[in-house]
Length: 383
Image 1 (cartoon, rainbow, N blue to C red):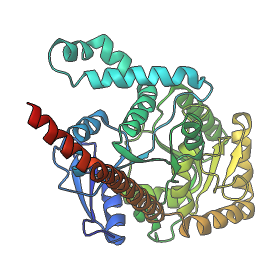
Image 2 (cartoon, rainbow, N blue to C red):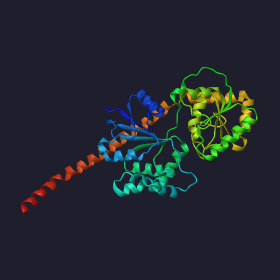
Image 3 (cartoon, one colour):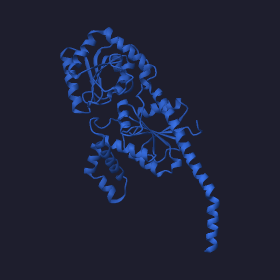
Image 4 (cartoon, rainbow, N blue to C red):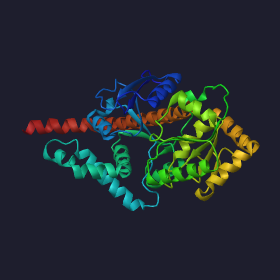
């Protein structure tokens, strides 16, 4: 490893979030020296790598700062995306130009004068906000082509394939189990039949949640809904304790192609709670339905849940396989280690290519230098 092993991690909220702290811990375990900064910072502390995720904030702010930096001083930018793509049914011939336009509009907001003010008017901001999934497509492509983003990662295998088919170089880096969920919780009574933890996000998910939970309540099942509306959100140990009490954890999708399964399954599996989900795309192909979780059509979700509540031995068999899988090779630490290995390889290849190009240019200069010198001397004699 080079002597500069510093990694700047950007966070998007006013306070440092758990993911930034988790990534910092993983990097420290790998021998790096991480520092955490708010995304509005103008100083990456001379770091060799820049690590961002989501985005949950304005990624263009990072693009603009890297563009102003001399290439030799830019950190190698790693971005781990956990955002959904535009609707997968839309033709890429539409998605790309719309994405380019919205990314261009985003860049205009940084301009001085009337152009910047027009880009920040209410209509422009409405288009900008409503089309954020398209904007990511255009922004990723711009940042990669400009040599600003060195490594783009997707936590969904489906989305990684989507971008690859669009011509963007993307690696699939699965979501992993966070450290807090790896801690052994004391055995407690599993007195929650079905647990929902999440946000409603879309009308589809909200209506489906109400219908499924309502039917289960009518059947006398003990349910608990943590949706940020009827019950405030829970995180950390409080969330882990609830999962430990749940026989079944429910997964519902905001959209038909959503990737919620990829990050919800590790938490449920580590708590030995059976994840029951509506049918989902294989965003994390390592987790297999029937072996590590249960998937069912929306029309039979309630019947499926009741079946596994009434057949604890079948439920426990899947739960144990899921637990063993998630505890061996599926942690955030494993994912970050894989990401940094790719980053080191690509950063080294990029540096080697730059040195080779410089060497070739120097060789050409050395070859032609005597002739150029003679020509300049002759020209000087005639002047």
